[in-house]
Image 1 (cartoon, rainbow, N blue to C red):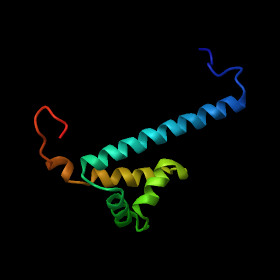
Image 2: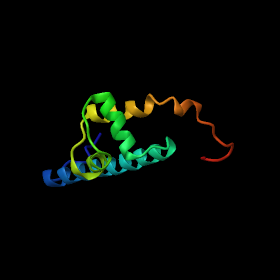
Image 3: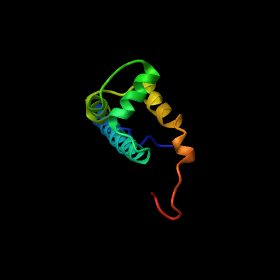
Image 4: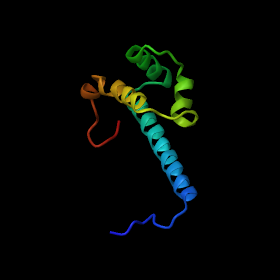
Length: 102
């Protein structure tokens, strides 16, 4: 099988990797905002739950900036964010109207 990146400069590969990471960050940010809406939470609520889980305090706006654009995200941090949403019983018992997203 041919390597599609064969003959491509290292700078271009680095640019592709950076752009891919930024697309991932944007998709993650949008997914978290949808989950916050679904769970009827704010960024401050998410920060409080992360503080209970990791014992590291932060504000909602700082957390939003960290996920949105300012810092690199570690696997440990992403797992902690996923754990906050997976431990919510509200996900199981929240009633839904048939045929709607409400």
